[in-house]
Image (cartoon, rainbow, N blue to C red):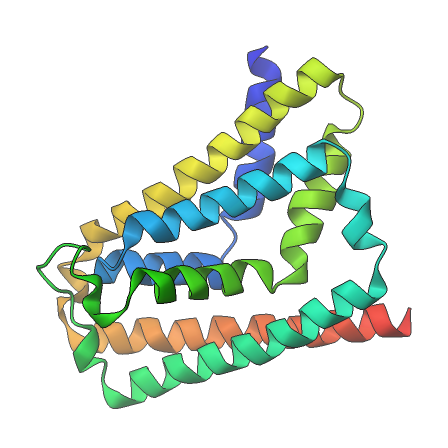
Length: 213
């Protein structure tokens, strides 16, 4: 029984840990103590729904629709470009308004729960690769398993998502002393901007491949 749980856990964990727009956003919200629970829960629920759909056999639907993949890619590029530009602007301005607050995330840091969750959803769902990873890849790996084995595999996969996102969001507080300096925030914002634009460039190449194919 535990073999399938561990298999699902490590497959999922390996896909999630890679540096990306979603992880960068969760890390930053954790450092700012800004609606951490809701941001992490949003990421976790998205993974749970998409992985469940993939394991249950619905993964091929999104992969077979070139139109859907192209639309997601184009919208994703525009959003990531805007998000990266905002990060570069914050780095240029010095990030004085991003100093880690001693207040709890109930304060919200000047951004509502709705806004934080909205950005998290956009970073998660506007990237076609999230569907390929969760629906297609996870689904294909689980496809040879029996129904009972799939449920165990899915339990491990979803569990890995919860451990990672909540660990990243709340564990970011351990870095608070380092991020008490504006210079550190400038470095982080610059790295986030680079990551966002790099992913946007990757999506452009991906969209061209889908269109040309």
